[in-house]
Amino acid sequence: MTTILVVDDEVRLVKLVRAYLERAGYDVVVAYDGPEALDVFRRSVPDLVVLDLNLPGLNGLDVFRALRQESDAPVVMLTARVDEGDRVSGLELGADDYVTKPFSPRELVARVGAVLRRSERTAAPAIGLLRRGNLVMDPARRIVRLNEREIDLTPTEFDLLRALAQHPGQVFSRAQLMSQLQGDWYEADERTVDAHVKNLRQKIEADPRRPSYVLTVFGVGYKFADEFA
Image 1 (cartoon, rainbow, N blue to C red):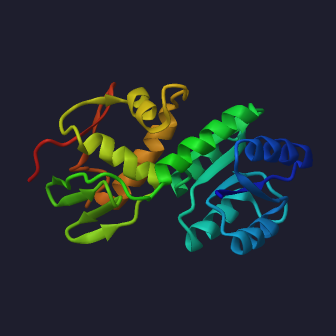
Image 2 (tube, helix red, strand yellow):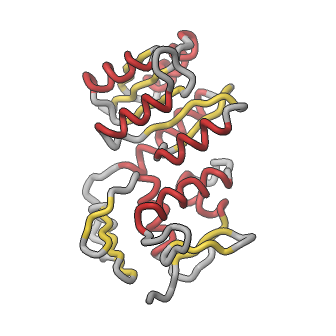
């Protein structure tokens, strides 16, 4: 059974989220502060973490940094609407999604399901390798290599790169990219897309400020280069 770790200091909220996630078929473990979150994570090894950024003992961003040193488990952040800076920081660290408070528990369950589907690494039907310049993607095994070196991407970064690389030269709006990654029900947020693109460029571009693969089309969105030096 898929295990979800829910971390928040609001006891009532944790109980509500836990009930909805368990109703959806997940096994749920909980923590109410930063140090406890790390302890429970190490003991339970969850498949996904729902992490509030405003935690006692150790704030959510510090918890997230610690988790990322130990695991690539997907993380869905919980943030207050006024905490835009923390939300962007979390995305830049590699969070897979975020939900702002107050939120619908059903929406959170849907987000969790979408992130888990993206992170699945189970066997898939044979799909040919995508070769773009010195970049090689293996969609079936979800592996990316650049100059023969494997690149560690989050599930969201991988799917973003694949969506672009499968159609070199085609321009995608931010809304189109979010629709492909999350589904049509998702309300696209331009800052979310931009944060994931920034992270991706840091990993695959020789000079992220002058990208060769993922290009910006000003006023529209992004495209994957159709020509390489």
